[in-house]
Image (cartoon, rainbow over all chains, first blue to last red; front, side):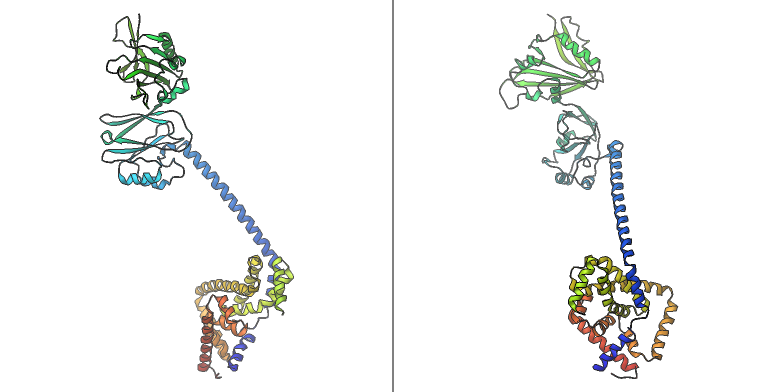
Length: 348
Length: 180
């Protein structure tokens, strides 16, 4: 065994012996070490510069892309892309069948259980839906939120499903979505969404919102708010026809405004149940929007009981078909030429 | 050399003392070379590996946590560098295959001519076996340190030492004039 060990150790002095130039090369290496350190410092510096440049470039590109997206291709966003923190891939999986963009308002229709399950996993407060009877519409704003948005009217004609939404101009960027259940009977391939001033937007003109009106409104607040107050026989109790004409003239000059008519109920079909009627006319963006609410006589949680949004129009005219000199009837004329009665003044 | 003295030098070198660094490098350079040679079988490549290792140790000294394991740490760096050089050399050799074959043949013939059967036997071992033999018999490392260095089980190291020894004995017995 000793013989073997000795033989192996021969390697140390022969095959594994240190070459003559080894020490010189090691000395050279040791002498060059500070240069290597400097080189590494420079490379780290360069790396940091590159990283910072990359970050700045990334931020610039992102900001530029966001700017382009917001200003030029915002209309191509789908409803879920506008919700921060929501996984867009999930929304893409919903495979949007159609979308509309009206003043930044977008919608998605949910027709199946599969779509519903995905939507439920994304949005909070999605109501339960019986898909045999109804379908769901999810609405959101491209910018802002659906806070202050109310459904004024849902109706269907032969071809279209018309959805009229009231915007009360409350944008707090909370990112909430609005879910609306709609009967399957109203389903149409085409959906038309119309965004109009909400019923609450009257408050900015100094009137109490319809939903907050109490049963004694006709006796007190209506006077304080300078409404046109009439009795059941169309006689003016407070204010005058000239006041109404002043409002019409302002509208002709494209001045946004609102006018409220409060009238006692006289119709025999309604008089037992209802006390008075409130009719709001809002003029905004060269259009009139008309709201009506009926108020109950008895104390209930909900003082009014009527579909508030009536219609919109482009002009207020005198009804040409009424030739009675004692009566002047003002009507709201729509774009299609039809018109609806607003108020009748009786000249005594 | 006193083990405590060596440790002090490592601590000082880590703090940036160049004299201490040179001292510890001079202390381990021969061991490094032999390990490199055992793996690369070529003086120039082995010296390159040692040089690269010295630079790596210098630039990464701050990463050494356990001073008592400095040698094992340095050897690991060396083995990594050897592997890198081996791969480069292999690629280079593949590009000039004929020259390598002739070169190897010349080496073996020269070794035979000089009756250096122990060298032939050594080259007959595989890379890990050569490294283990060098560490164990020449650099006098314990099986435990070799196991740590090569990430092997201690019993595996012992077995490999035994097998390498048997291989060398067999090679010399069949070829050589001298019987062990």
